[in-house]
Image 1: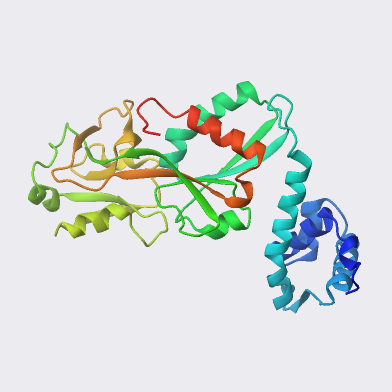
Image 2: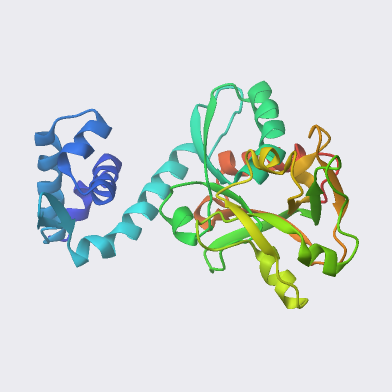
Length: 301
């Protein structure tokens, strides 16, 4: 690469490079960008000349990145972020801004925290739009690779480039159908009951299981579900119980009661998490402030 080769780079070329890396296909990249395959190939040829590397090679019916392409991916993301901030740094006006944000949250955090945020944002920034994706078991790569810009989770990824802020502190409670049974009054009664549990990853259970095990107790799991949605239908009309965050239920669960657990467990803290490259972005800082301002009254921020 010549000394001035980097001057031929632009944001569109870097975006295209990252999309090819993500899709593993020139044709799918062309579809996402709304352009032709020849235009994608032409831009890749330019990037190959600049970097002095093939970047992508044939692999079966698709293409695979070279080691150089993988090494350059983070540089490309950081460069795009810098260009994005360069264009929006001086001024962010919510009333006229047009921007899309991706938030990661499981249904507990989504249903409790995000409705208030979106109502607030629609009044002040009608040009903003959002996608909410499941955070599942949170990892730093989702934020590093810009799969989401903000994450709501009780288990923030531990990494030097990830920033977190505690939003609220909740606790676990016992949910049951009071028409069928009473709440377990002792650890022994709790252990003898059959439970509905949540496994967000499909295999790994929640932290509460480790907390319960540390007390020398073990749950008799009858049913494991992949998320919180609809769990009440599996409890209603049965003697099953569920151990869930107290803020999940609210006051709208017809036929379902909530009582304290018959033992102490650690608090359940919920965090707002983002990558450090967005820490000083006016748009992202504004959105974080709106989320904090929209926290329900019971929250401890």
